[in-house]
Image (cartoon, rainbow, N blue to C red; front, top):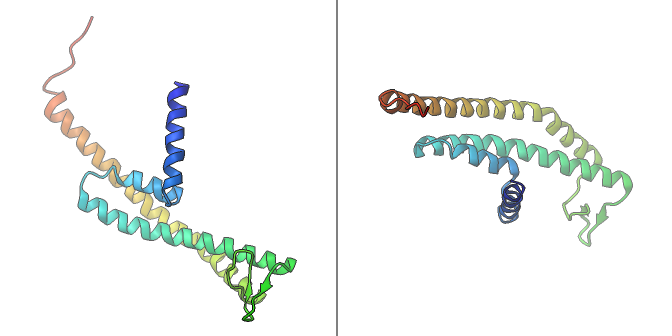
Length: 153
């Protein structure tokens, strides 16, 4: 059993090295694969990815502005030959007040973005569960109830 888990873990690591999507996006795609109808799957993918991208973009902006603010305060921001200020990753840096305002904006709006995505995600999961239940009922009605299990005693 340990060998199988190790093999699965190694495959997952290899997949994540090749795949440039975030973990959230990979898991969302795995969830969407459970929707049998291609049209429904594409519609859900479009809506879900838009919401997820919005959340991830806000998280990325918070991380970037937090890092820039810290670098500004520590004096690590450099000025280029053209007079632009850049951080350790080569990103252009605005004034401290501008960065603080942007950081505050993204932090204030993140809960709303997460809430919207969460509602869409919960709806998606509910739809998948309903689809699975429909398929399960079909098998029960059309096959399992007509041919009950035999006792092997």
